Structures are given as structure tokens and as C-alpha cells.
Length: 145
Image 1 (spheres, helix red, strand yellow):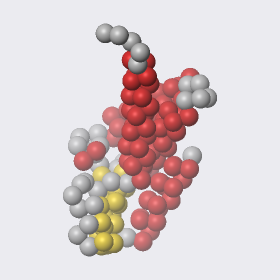
Image 2 (cartoon, helix red, strand yellow):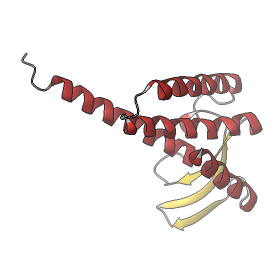
Image 3 (cartoon, helix red, strand yellow):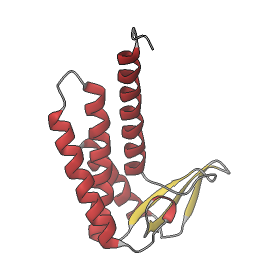
Image 4 (spheres, one colour):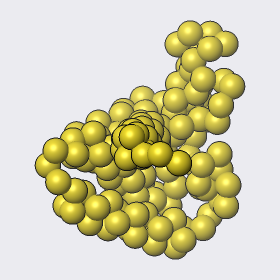
């Protein structure tokens, strides 16, 4: 829930304080706040596929919720990773339902503009991969091949 609230709060601030297309240098040539409305998925691919993105978002959220509730309590990092993915997915889904596009504003100049929901999703995927790789390597220890 924290990810969703922070994501939506920062996007609301950007919408209130900036004009669409405006870019404010925070660290010139390194990091800017750049307000864009992204009609597509990552990197703007598949623009204006609203039904596809909303359906995919809902299915992803349902899958994450099912996986979360099936995990044992001791799998904390997996649960944190899923929670980050859930919050980020909900944040972008809210934008798609409200505006038909996603508010993006974090601009490192060498990468397409993104938002905090995207960051949470990537961090969640990283935590899941990390934990799954650790579990895989543990299960392979001691086995002879």
C-alpha cells in the first residue's frame, strides 16, 4: 500500500506543479524531472493498447496476490518482492484507468523516462530473482553430478 500511495502522490505533485513536456534539471545532464504521459508499456512500446495493458495489469495483480498468500511466512524477501511488484502494478494501473496513459517523470537522460511504480516493479523482480537463485544454488549444494 505504501508503494501505491507514494507513487500516486509523486505523480499528483508532478501533474500539479509541472506542464506536460516540461523538464527541470536537478543535476544538469544527469538527472531531470521530465513530465510525460506514456501511452505505451516500457520504453513506450505498444502505444495506446489500453485494453491490453489494463487486462494484463489486472491479471498480474491477481497472480501476485495468489503467489503472496501461498508463500510461507519465512519467505520474507519473496513476499517483499511481490509486495513491491503489486504496489507498482497498482500504481500504473490506476493511471491507465484514470488517464489512459501513465505519468512518467524520472529522467536520467540515458534511459527512457519512468516513475516510482516502475522502480518498485523492477526492485521486486530483482528480489524475486535473487531469492529464487539463492534457493536454487542451495538445493544444488551437496549434490553430486
